[in-house]
Image (cartoon, rainbow, N blue to C red; front, side, top):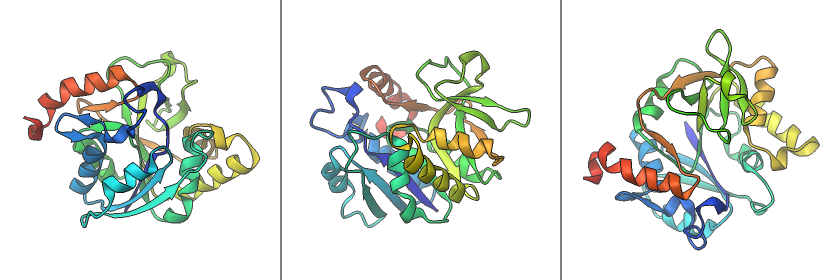
Amino acid sequence: MKAVIVAAGTSSRLRPLTDAVHKTLLPVGAKTILDRLVGNLLQCGIRDLVVVTGYRADQLRAALAGRDDLSVSFVHNSEFAETNNAYSLFLARREIGNEPFILLDSDIVFDPAILRRLLDSPQPDALVLRTTGEIGDEEIKVALDGAGRVERIGKDVPRGEAKGESIGIEKFGSAGPALFNALQRRVEEGNGRNEFYEAAFQEIIDAGIPLGTVDTESLLSIEIDTLDDLAAARQVVHRWFKDDG
């Protein structure tokens, strides 16, 4: 199985730290965000990566170059400053084809047991859902149907109707081709260049394709969007990961 890492954005909310450095290369404890992400994939037996670059692409290439434990394909979004992550994912379609894949945002620090739980789930298509803690207005919120599958997903889901928030890790098997078809249609005919890829998730859900969920429960997951997020991750990582002392 391949993993698609979407890492094209400028990470403006982490400035000035990201003025000269790609967000994924910021240290959190003894390792960078990227090293932690790649290490989690390797622990789960995934070594084939498709990395969508944009901002500071040369730094990402250098960070992953020469590693004999990985097979990495790079896809470059030259319009990263004018597009959103749906367009970046759309650009990866030829590298994936009809194969199953794991999709990850590049800015998550998480316990590798979360990824193992997703891979072991019998659901062919599912996302990781955090149901504990407060749900922010700016988060990708998820409402579920009676069977525990995703009914609605997006920032516009009312907090009172949301079961939790998506942390930015998904598994696509049988629904992968439909997802890329939806992305292509939205890019070519709609607002797909400037929206979050969850809009395409919603399209295939509305078409009757089930998208299950896997709960993080008590396992660590932190999305690093802001300086406060980074500070919080640095505070907890030493207590969570043995390799950080």
